[in-house]
Image (cartoon, rainbow, N blue to C red; front, side):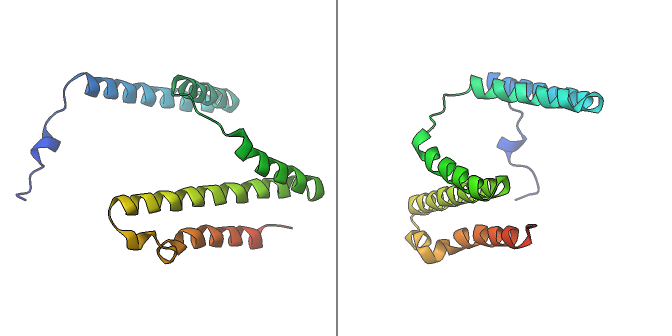
Length: 148
């Protein structure tokens, strides 16, 4: 390298795609600035504005398929724990379920990427044990430091 930026990086981007991207970035920055100003006057109104923007994004995107049967088990478990232990236990149950679901997705994605890259040694349990132990450690810290 001779200290210069690569020519493709230094070249100005032209075309409709770059103008569309710049326009969306400018609109997002102005919306954030406006909501920040509104939050100084009325925080609930700013939260309503964020909710409206979020709803607009969700409704303008692709339709999302929700697997209601997969949500039934954690919902019933949370309800059962909530009946016997109370609201904090029910929230804790949902937290543990979400932590497990995210970790399971993360390890499956790591296995898929390692297999696609041609690295079968990175798909073994020994290679992925850190992906399970890190959330488990965090959960243990939360459990032992939670007020009773």
